[in-house]
Length: 195
Image (cartoon, rainbow, N blue to C red; front, side, top):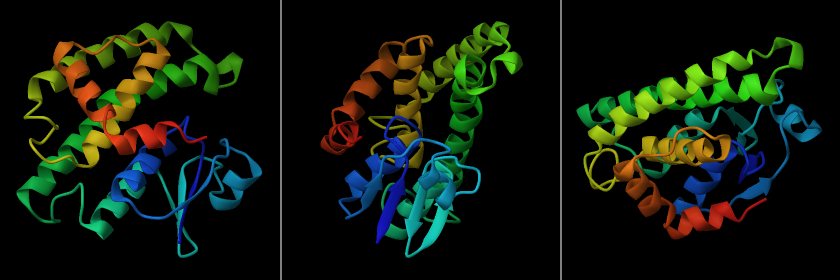
């Protein structure tokens, strides 16, 4: 039995979307960070957590990688050159796209008010825009790595949606087309309707 702990309006969306793509049965507890349910699953109170056979897996990227590997979908085989490239995409998205968004979020509403530095947000937006331009040039096909959707696509599409909500620079024409194509997928649409 799989159970996702975390509201769709968080990085838990990535996990919910992949589970919908995989077509596997799961339960969903749409709790907020630091709630009693989140703390029971993960002592940090962060979401998402995936409970699988009673074992908690934390961090959305670790969960996506586990699900992809265990179901043999949305990934390349461990040890292959394709997997190395996939892992490089994953790292770049987390560092350059997700990192900039998270920096902006922390200094907007996550950190205590007396710890926020609003002047850092324009720099985060600049970093995001520069990374986004590099990613647009590197697209290899309908997905980041060509014809096959992989873990990095789940990360990048989620981040591009997050960026739109957070007021970060909009995607250029090529990335906007990619975003539209991927978010039209039925599994994405189902996940977007979850609590």
